[in-house]
Image 1 (cartoon, rainbow, N blue to C red):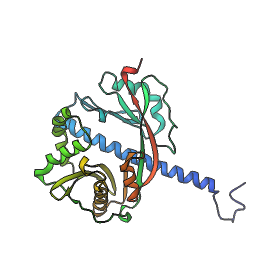
Image 2 (spheres, rainbow, N blue to C red; image 1 turned 180 degrees about the horizontal axis):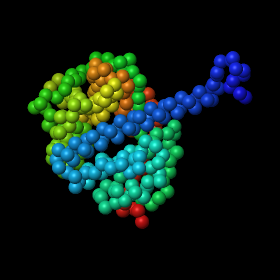
Image 3 (cartoon, rainbow, N blue to C red; image 1 turned 135 degrees about the horizontal axis):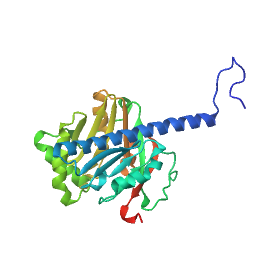
Image 4 (cartoon, rainbow, N blue to C red; image 1 turned 30 degrees about the vertical axis):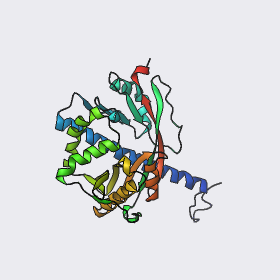
Length: 290
């Protein structure tokens, strides 16, 4: 049936087409979230590479339209961020980029409506994590939560190493990686687009968080409570504090991502962020590429 009855009739869309349009719009937002996360990770690696003179250990490269990050010392950073479908034809180049390293890579493919929409049949690849991409168009309107027992403020200059140690503890960094991580991460405090927050419970450090700003856009970066303060509302309090900070800095749109079904995911939805799409990542292990 035509959606236009005659030239003077108003244009109407069927519910089905409206649903498709909204789905496409949400997935476009999810791709924007992916691009902001990729920008954050690449900024960190480029900072470490340049400030610590690590060109032999760190490489940031475009493979087609995909952003490939390689850090031979830290497995987390070995990721490929893909904002479109062109990555699929670049898999041989992606494999070559990571072959010979210790960690292989994780490929973060474009968001979809549901999991299972992407499959890699090549040797060495296996499904890895399930992520949700979250967004809100106006962070000034988000619910900022009730009063909490946590006092949240930026770290003082003398507290920066304490912040980093808490960050590494919260994200369960391996002990042998801590000295190198401290050397690299201390340079992040010089980045003007980053804001750092510490949550205190009385006189004890309870959690840490980072916000990245770019014009009118903000990204909720790493945020976590220390183990002994989990399930006490610390992470939610850090979310609310960063949203308020972004709003006060003039940001409007806010993005983030989280493990599907995890506590961070639940907390982000609770403060008002909405899921725009999902991604199943795939991990490439060169030792299985035979």
